[in-house]
Structure formats: C-alpha cells, structure tokens
Length: 278
Image (cartoon, rainbow, N blue to C red; front, side):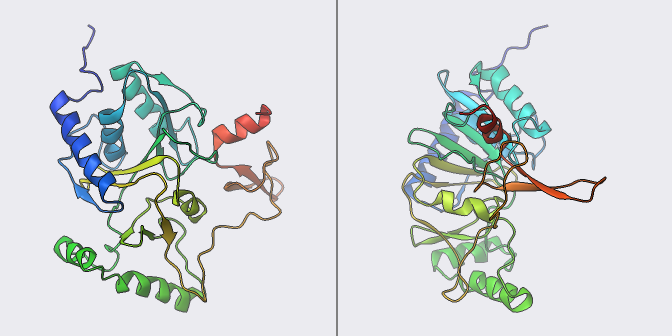
C-alpha cells in the first residue's frame, strides 16, 4: 500500500509557523527563538530540530546534502536523507558546492560555503549559559542584560586547571557583539567558518524547542582572552593518508597491528573530491 505524504511531511500551517520563527531568528542574530517543536518519526536528540528547519524551507528545486560528523554515509545522515527525499522528491548530493541546503551534525564542511546556500546545524544544547545556570528564567535575564561574566569565568577556570581553554567542541561565540551563542558541538576548528560566512547558518534544537541563526556576513568571534587567545586544533605537518590534503580537520587513526598513528580527512566528501582531483 502506497503511503501519501504532504510535501516535506508537515502540513502547510506547521511549515509557515517554523518559517516565521526562522525569520525572527535571522532578524536577531544569535538570539534563541522558542518554537513549537513538532513530533517527528525520529527520536528527539537525533536531529529533530535541524530536520524541522530543513523540511520547512526545502523546495522542489533544492539539492540536499546531509552529513553527520563529517560523513555522508553515517546512519543518522542516511536516514534523514531518506525521510526528506521520500517526502519531497528533491535531489540529493554529496558535493558541498552543489547543495543548496546542507544539514549537518557536529561539522561545517571544508569547502567554503557560498551565497544562496543554507547550512542547518543540529543542536542538542542551545543555551551556552546552561553549564553554570540551570534556570531558563535566569538565563533569559542574563541574555537580556548582556551579563556574560559566567561564560568568561568558565573559560578562566579551564585555564587555571589545564593551562589553556579546554573546550574541545561547542566553544561559545559572540555574535555581532551582542549575544553569546552556542555554535553547536562543532570542533573549535570550525568556529572561524561562522565569521562572515556567505551562507545563511541556522541552528535547530528540537528537544529544547529553540531556533537561532547567523545571517550571511555576520561577525562571529570565539570568546577568549588577550593573553590566552582562541586557538583551533592544530594539524600542522599532518596530511591525509588517503588524499594527501593538508589544513583540514582530521581524524586520528591508530593502527592496532603496528601501533602507528595516521591522519585522515574527517569530511569524507572533501576527501573523495581531492582523490578525484577536483
């Protein structure tokens, strides 16, 4: 029996409501806009926030790319692609440059994004102040008053304990000099890609029912100190064992037989394009 879906799964009213929330998020960069997170055929925590954004924005002429921690073929990425493709019929691509909508978990693609593209990031914890303030009411007051001393104190404590800022991912950023924002659990290596990106970047947290955005060409700065500047992960003198690429985010591979360590591009699509000589 053939099952009929409305285009992009949701009813038109739901898509309009999510688009209205998205417009507000774009109008106030870095501000978390509450929204009525819908029930989805996947569990909360598996990308429902990003998926709702994608389904509300996708059109028949769009080209979709979905990645999970750099891979186009992970279980999460494959199933999200299947759901969107089945309910829309849109084309799917693994090439970043071809895609008009890119949904991602934990990574920003290595190939620079361009005007007209939309990057949708899945977010588990949208509130950057939650690490030291459990109350939603209080975090809203802190944002309203631009009181972010707790965020700086958190980084200062890391320096005191470890000699450096130890955030491996989700390092907080300041958006347009106003709101401290959680960039989603992307590695520090990807934080600079947020700054003045040509693409529209959207963040969706389905479980926490929040949407926020970084519009194109918006100033985004990672929190740091003058004497302890923000630094990305270093892969100096390292190259990919498959394609030979340098200057990209890499996975460290340990060979159990030889005990030797090698490196490989985390972005599988980028690695494949380098191998093909593109």
